[in-house]
Length: 459
Image (cartoon, rainbow, N blue to C red; front, side, top):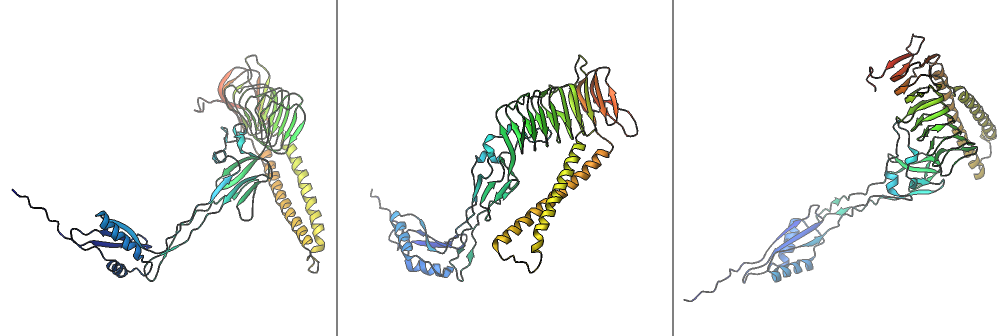
């Protein structure tokens, strides 16, 4: 039986033309002919593109090659056969840090009271004054495209995002905001979109002699006998504090406590371990962070109050804790008065120096004279701003010192006999062991009251 050969039907080639999404390109999809069918003609494709609205950019060579490929491969082939102007999208700005970026981007470490934990700050953040700490590669905005249709329409590009980095505390930026330089030595950090430096002076070795620090002290060593230290910022003592004197204008952190030392601070005094036979004065609070942070012997004075776990010893060691009394207030008022006097004197000197140039006939055409005048005016503004700050601090301090005290002493653990608790004008001598109590003075009652923290649900 003979088998008849199959006869393939003859079908001409076909095509479809269409735009991409933004009409900057025209696409051609070609289906090859079958059997003895005719291939697609270039002229037919060109006519279809023009009817579709393509006004320019038709590539007849690309059309011809697409038809040939479809025929040779016996399969559908798609290609771009008309090209407008593609949009060039922008690139985002990039910040190049001159210190490890991962360190800068991490939040600063904090202690339970909200103070900065200087001892846990990554040393990689540290920069010197005048050091370049970051540069910015600006965002590129790109270039718009243009459609193939007539009249051509603009196709917007996607612009790059700006860095939006700004200079914060102790950082200066160049006029174009592309370079950031540290004004002070310290630790680099980000506060929102602001690049800042936390002024600090790290010291690795022990301190045994009198010395002063113009910024926060980060001491990894010990503070030992003979040390008489004054710090303009905060102080964090990573080692022991023994038989030393420490005066701090900010917060004082003693993770390993202190023994037989004199400590004065304008900010909180924070205890990570016990203090023995110390004299501590603060205009804020004394706060114990752990059960091991006991207070034994000595005298502790905190204007805003004391939070402790253990006060005194089973041996009835004489210990005095005082709240609601500002031992440093008079000293600070004297310092403020002296600084106010200096500011006023310097402002008067600047005014005298500027007086010859007040007249409209004064010769200020010299660039050197203009620059000198601008420096004097800028310095006067800084002095006037500082004067306002000092006057505000003086008023606030005077009000606080004379206001009725709301300070209290909170003991979450044990307070032993031999402890004297003073709040404002009134004192209380502990004669029996107590646990979890609050010492306070209620308005209208001329005595120290003792209340259980258990009853107040504060334990």
